[in-house]
Image 1 (cartoon, rainbow, N blue to C red):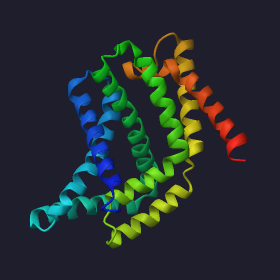
Image 2 (image 1 turned 30 degrees about the vertical axis):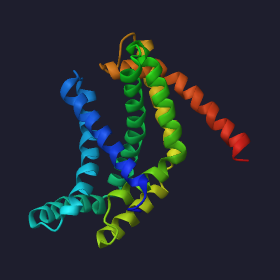
Image 3 (image 1 turned 90 degrees about the horizontal axis):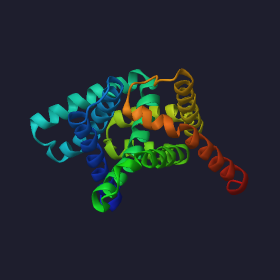
Image 4 (image 1 turned 120 degrees about the horizontal axis):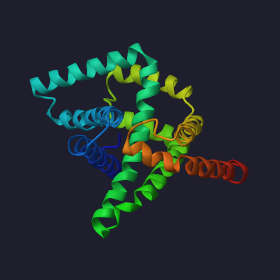
Amino acid sequence: MIKKHWLPLVFYFILIFITCYFWRTIFISKLSLFEYILLSTLAVLFSSLVIYPALKPFSRYKFIALTMKAVGGIATSLMVLGQGYLVIVFPIMTFGLIAGVQILTWEAIYYLFDVDHSMKVIEAYQALLVSIVVFAYFGRKITIYTYKYTSNEHSQAHKDIQSLIDKALSVFFFRRRAYELVILLTILSTLDKLYGSPIIDSDFWNTISKISFESLITFVAIDSYYINFIKK
């Protein structure tokens, strides 16, 4: 991490805003079990990204140092014991970070310009599409940067985990996973329509199911244009 550069500071504040948004939604909004589990998982993951770096300047205090060592030791053990943990958690955090920025942007627009909340479907379409596109093409870089930002670059644990992350990311194809995500959403939304009632009883899913097919078509068009005209 380049400590004197402005990017880490901006990145940290984005993490704080996203974390606060997740916790605020959990405690204020009426959530289904699915939404509660999803948001709670993301909230805990992002909270760890916010809290751990904040404790570093106070590591000279014994209690803080022991706390950081305990938390870091548990996290290191989980990561070292299972590469599957890395393959699943880091990309989920990456997608959550990208989607969180989209949601916060729209919430700011609602607040600053008094936009009608009936545009929720438009918000969902834009947020899902941009998140998928960014995840597909920049997910690897964002994931690596997220880890480097929150890690201790001088520790042996850093080298061990970095090695595991490199191996995990080498078999995790972000563009392929983006396709699989939108295909899965499209299949579930189609089953919703055929069945006549929502498969997942959630306001969040009801909104996503309305725009999943459109997101798939748009993403395929963008990816095809990139492969056929830009990448060549």
